[in-house]
Each structure stands twice: as structure tokens, then as C-alpha cells.
Amino acid sequence: MKVIVIGSGWSGCAAALTAKKAGAEVVIHEKTDMVLGLGNVGGIMRNNGRYTAAEEIIALGAGDLINITDSLTRHKNMDFPGHKHAWLYDVNKIEPIVRNYLLDSGIKLKLISRVSDVKMDGNKIDGIYTANGDYEEADVFIETTGSTGPMGNCIRYGNGCSMCILRCPSFGPRISISKCAGVEDLHGERSDGNYGAFSGSCKLAKDTMSKELVSELENKGVVVLKVPKEDINLDKLKAKVCQQYALKDFAENIVLLDTGHAKLMTSYYPLDKLRKIPGLENVKFIDPYSGGKGNSIRYLSVAPVSNDLHVRGVDNLFCGGEKSGLFVGHTEAICTGSLAGHNAVRYALGRPELVLPTETAIGDIISYANYKIKTAEGRKNRYTFAGAEYFNRMKEKGLYTTDKNEIKKRIEKLGLTDILTKA
Image (cartoon, rainbow, N blue to C red; front, side, top):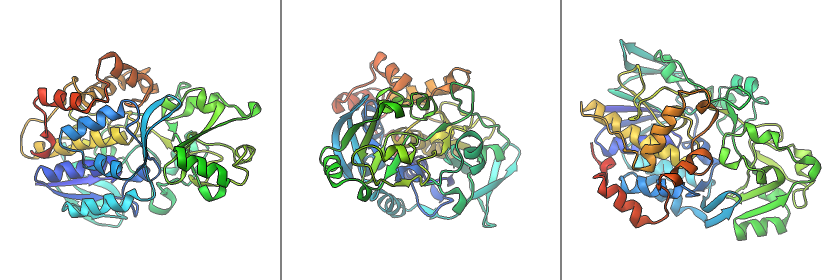
């Protein structure tokens, strides 16, 4: 059987790996020249409930990418406002290691290959067309294109194209494959009813910061600096994707994390105001380049899926990551992608697809987010193991723990140990 994965962010990479483990021939089509997408500017793992989810996906047999981020960790068990025991991986080292891991696993990777349309046969996809003029068929397809772009959406719902890591001007816009297959997209909303939300952080070049500030950041992993009273902007918090950072602390302070670059935990920050802060007088944005004005707009393309991540209305299409729900974060993308890849092969083999039980954090967040996106109120929220509404639910249900043995026993008791290593 052959599986085509469209998009190679964390979710696409995870989907490709579980599909390969289950015995499929796997091909990834990626529109840019790098894998991982937003993973190249992210860097935060294992914070709050993500620790639980990371250990669950390891116990389920799909911990490959978690193990890679762990191996590249710059700082472990860090606390910063609203977050406990965070790990920070090095965003400057991650991409080639993941790329080589995919290739060594026998996965075929087609870079600079933007999928632009599909060929349908009734409710099934026969094959995909690329902007390069190629056509390729497969038995089953997994869309992990994310929900950011094209440029017009960032102009319409944001502050314009911010020239982010996804580089739409260079490699072309993201195209919704589920929509090409005849399924209407769902959209995330803000509290004011506008679609989408700003990406949650920016990157600063360390060389443009004071030596004292860089030394403190690299030593501690986190630095918190006071924002001048006249520059505090509480309203901006409402537009953030990452609602776990929509706390007053992130408006009243500059929070910097060491992910190789200096990760600025705000959607954007006017450069003239940023340079008023001691130690940042000469600072420069490196992602997005227009981080003084805005950031990319996300959650503009979500496919309706069932809890096995099968797209409703298309027989042989699955989704993972932001494309499969209003999820936030690398761990969330890895978890949903892993399940989508596994179920794609189950479908191709004619076997019942796996729905993870709500006794697991992963199964519960998929089920909960899937229910909430059907409501007007639910479309205004995002769902993450790391904070906000869903992390509170995790704690209330007793799903949150950092005890590895307890998590391992939970998966074992459900009969799911290493379930994602086979078809």
C-alpha cells in the first residue's frame, strides 16, 4: 500500500513515521526546502500537560520525534509565567536531524513540491497534482498542511505578510487539500468574531542583544524583563494563537526563552518600543522579519474529522496537526499526526480505525476539540496540553501527571502499549 503525506511539519513527519512502521510505502510532499515548518522556530516541549502527552505517545510506540527533541534540549525543567518543567530544544539544529531520520527510515521526501489539486473518483482521491506539473497516485492520503496562509489571509485578517518561516512568497501559498476534495474548511475565530489568530512568538538575534542579557539567558534559559507602563498592551493578548500565553504576565513583561535564538513570547512587538528596554537597544527580529508589525495568521483551514482523524466526506483522506482541529503546539501535532498515519494504513488494509480512549490525554483532547469546534463558543478557543481551557480539563479529569511509570501503566492497562508500531 502507498501513503502520500502532504506537508512535513511535526504532524506530517509523525504521520509518515507511523505509516512506515505499519508497513506502507510513504512519500512526503513538502512545498518548501525544509521539513518541520513552524518546528524550526518553536522550541518548547514538555511544559505543563505536554509532559504527560509526550510520555503517552512514547508508550503508544511513536516517540521517535519526542526522543529527537529531548536529545537536542538546551534547558530542562524550566519554569516561566504560567508554565512548569518546560524543555527547550535547539531550533537551529533540529531540521537536518529530523530530515535524515525520515530518509533513514525509508521515507521518500519530495521537497519544493507544492500539492495544488487532487483527482477524485467519487468520494475517493485517486492522486495529487503538484504545482511543478507532476501527478502521483496512492491508496490513501494524509493532509498536514497546517492552517497558516496564504498571504492574502495574513493581509486580510492580520497586519500583512510578516515574512515568516513558511515563506509563502518564495514557495507559494498553502492550499487546502480537503477543500480541493470538496470538503468545506472550518475556521478558528477570535473573541471579536474575526477569523484566525496571530502566531504566538517571534525570534530575536542574540548577537543584537547586550552580552549581559545573552549570558543570563543562556545560563538560566529564561529572562523576564519589565515592559514600560506606557507600552503595556493587554488587548493584543486576545489575538494570540497560544492562549496559554494570553496571561497579563505576557503583556506586562518581555519573556525571553533560549531556543538557540532568543524566543520572544509575543505575537509581535513594535521595534521602536522593544528597543526601549535595557539590553535590547540594538535588537533585530529574525523570524518573522516583520515581527515589529505582525506575525502569521493561523487557524484559517481546519478539516471536519472524526475522532480517528478521518476526514468526513472523503473515503481515503486523513488529517493531523492544526489541519485536524484547533490544536496548538508541537506535541499536539506529533500526537495527532502519529494517529493519522497509523489509521491511514488501517484504512488501506480494510481494518477498523483506532480511536484512542478518553482515558488517555491524547484521546481526550482529540474528542474534546472535535466536539468544541462544532460550537460558536468552541471555535473561539484553541486546545493545548500546555494551558488554558484544555489543561484545566486535564487536571480535573486526573489525566495530568509527570510520573512516567504512571503514564506507562495507564497505556498498558488500556492494552495500547506500542499500538502505533504495527498495523
